[in-house]
Image (cartoon, rainbow over all chains, first blue to last red):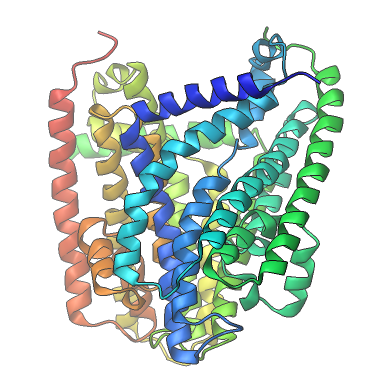
Length: 266
Length: 265
């Protein structure tokens, strides 16, 4: 087993430096992410004000949920599957295949490094949102630490899912239709649209068998105090399981994918 | 007048060519149906969830919110078909130094760069929006007068003009800024805020979506015309916003062109 730590560190550092050059772009990106949660936040705060708390979510919980949402969204960003379409059809992937390690590692570490800058940009935005909406929660140091761990784990799961979908481009140029459906399922079943507690019970049951909520809702609920300590540890266990499953999916598909590739345009 | 008719003729030729190009890729039609379906399902699910817990949202009923969603999808379809493809091409050409080829044509440059492309299959969104709007209208108990329909048509026209101007003004910044693709993401996010009536938002956000980036008012006012909520003040505000954004966008574009030194020259 090769030691990939130096590669991960070098790629992350490079990506961080690159992003730090474009701080304005990073700020606009983070602003772009804000609109969606602010809309959800306003709508669900209004509902909670009119109807009272919904399955443990009152005005404060919805507010806290959608503010932490913005951080988890930043953590969640991963390589878009659509990028593979162009890499494969243009033959640009040939350059990446000449490297002694799979592009997976460079992409995973590169996105991780970029997040450090995005998170730094996110901090003042989060303070602004907290002052504006005043969420009434008091997270413990343990919850804050677990948010950090679970958000990184969520990133790896989501990265793997999108990577596996991207690899379908080695077989078809029309993977986009499938990708659209998976992204829609993710929106509904990850907690991105609403906390799963707001969804009907059968949707909550379905979501617990899928990886999506472990990438998005779980880190948020860890921080805002919706889970007990036991549930947090169990959730981390589920995340570890999904990292293993999705990584296995990548390994299996990657070996077959590069055999399929015939160096178009190289 | 002749110059205007000439520009219209050039636009129609571009549209015909673009449509012929697009229909070659018929699978994109299937893809577009899936994308529109996804947008529709997520929009309807969000509304249904809200009304699972309350009977109104800031005074708006479920059918009224469905009408807003229909207009949001419909206007989004018009933007996606006629406006956004042109804006991306424009940004790309500025970056690559290819805009000179557009500026030297014997037609108005703003009209040329705004109308030379269409993404034909996005008409699926226009049709979807119209169907959702029809579905909402069937659920609404209010009866529409001819005047309501007229205000709706005026509101829709003003809304479209405002949305075009906002996109045009933002993409004009590509004369100075390098990475305007991210700006496009921001605009898409702001447009999505129009999926709900801006009256449910806090005052500061209503102000942003009415005066700074007037995308919210462009969608909400036409919906208000159909749901018996329209005040004369709201319509007057939309008309005023339309006139101001049109004038400012044109002035900004001309200023940008004057300062453009032609990257390929």
